[in-house]
Structure formats: C-alpha cells, structure tokens
Length: 402
Image (cartoon, rainbow, N blue to C red; front, side, top):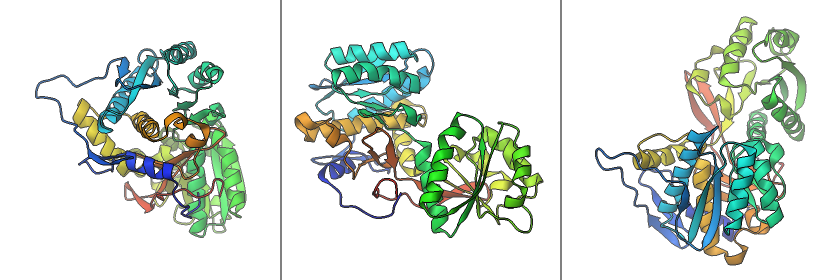
C-alpha cells in the first residue's frame, strides 16, 4: 500500500465520522456530527445481554445479517449478532432494520437465509462468514440485484457485487513486503506450506516482490509439520557466511511455526542477518517467544482499535468478543452511515467502491470493484516476547496495487 494521502471524498469523511474512536470513552460519531454512546454494563447479578435472532432496530431501511447461530460457527455468529446490535446502539438507532438470519453454518442454510431476507425487503446482505456459504448466499442476492458484504477470508469468493470485509492475507503480504523494501531489503526468500493458506499467499508474494523491484532469491514449499527438507534446500540462501537473502517470508500459523522456528534455529538461521516476515496469523504471544523470530516483522490491523471495541463489547455483554466480531460491527456502522446520507444510492456500486474508503474499528478499508478489499495495516516487530509497532497503519489508502 502506498503512503500517499489522496483527497478524502465526502463518503470517506462520512464513514470516518460514523465509527467510534478507539478510546474506551466511546465517543461515537455520525455523518451529522459526534454523539455520545450510551452503553452501560449489565446490572449486578444480571445475565449478559444477548441479541435475539429476528430483528435489530425498527427503521425503514432493511438489511440482512446472515451468520451461523446454530451448527458450525454458532459461537462466532452469536458474537457477530451482538456486535451488530452494539453498532446500532452506538449509532443512536439509525433508520435501519437488521434482519438477523441463521445460515446454520451450511451453504443451503445461507442460500435460504439470504433469499428469505431479500423476500422481506432486505436491500443488502451482510455475511455470511464461511466461503462456501458466501457463494451460496450470493446466488439469490445477485438474482435480486442486491449487493453482499461478506466476512470470508477466501478471496476467491469475491466478485462484482460480492464484497469481502475481512482480513485478507493478500493485503498483509503487500504491506509487509512494502515495509521491508522501504527498510532496504532487496532480496527475498520464502518457505511456504503446502496448504490452502500457502496457495493463497504465494502468488501475492511473488507479485509484491516484483512490483517493488526486489529480487526473489528462492521459494520452497513444504508439507505442513515437516519443514526440514525445505530448510536444507534453502541452506545456502538463508544460512551460512554468504547468505543470499535479506528477508525470509514465512506465511505460517502459530501451530506451524512451532515446528518451523526450531528447525530454522537448528539449521543455523539468524534472524539478525535475514529478517523473517509474516502475516497477521502471527499475532499471538506464543509466536513472540520463538528465538528464530526475534526481530521479525508481520503486518496486521492496528490492535488499538479492536481493543477499544472489545472493551465496549465486554461492558455490554460480559464476555470478550472473538476477532471477527468487529467485522459485523463495522459493516452495520457503515450501512447505517450510508443509508442516512445517500438515499436511494446508499448501496450502489459507486458508493460502496469509493476509492478513498471508509474508517472502521480495524482501520481504513475500501472495497475494490471486483469484490476484494484493501486495508490500512500496521507493521509490528517481534522483540523480547512482545510485538510493537514499527510502522503505524496509514489513515488513508493510496492507489490500489502500488
């Protein structure tokens, strides 16, 4: 992502104003000026408040929220439903009605939920969460000419009219490579697991390195849990007295890193000579303690924004939200802002794909016409069992693909 600061358009200013600041005081803004949220903790001894399936709000603009309330992912769906309710409360009950529908964690359930909500007048579908369910829900939405803002991290389900408000690994790859090149890294190697996540990021890594004019020294794939052969093949590139790479890209989960990191250390890998690079899946304390990753960089959404949201959610519902809950919050807040300001054009393609983007709990984001999204991400450095920001998330997004 480029560091340039394009002029903010009216829609970008509206969305930036609509969402709460990260402070726990929860000053909430809308298009017509700041407001104060009235979010109170539960009464002593009372059960945590839980939004029920059905409807949230009584406004004239109807929007569907399709999430799993039973079956696979039910706990995530319940939290996303609660986050949608919180967004409605903090936006001071806009002229919006959220039709909450259970997709049962299945494609058939998602298709039925979307079709039923659209039949009841929903102008937009928020969700589903899982990739197969997004594809299923997109069918009736597309037939009715209604857009979808989904929460899947699988970029292959994005399409014209099906937008992904999620944490796409492709954006994280772009950001960490960009920052590494800006810091003087010119030669990149990669160890990529043979799984769907590795497949999703390899092409983006190759493209990002080439776009920045850097050199791709080597890429090795390996079976998950068995990195040693790949490390041996890379030995002359990332270890020894004459290393050929400045950085080593490791798009691996914390569980996978538990095998990869010790194997790198055993092979003589020095993170002080070849900087490890990763994605947001690294954002866990157990990763921060690995010796092979001291000095490593990874790209992720700024944690401060989610921390503020999580504090307000905890006060309202008596539990900590899962990471994906903020996506439901941001989608409802965005929907409320656009419906308040843009009348019949509130969910038009030109409105949703405005290039300057919108500001949410997890930072600035925008939808691309083909359905994927860009996010303004921070870069963190792992050091002494902790991760600290070395490059803050920009407040605005530059031109796509730069």
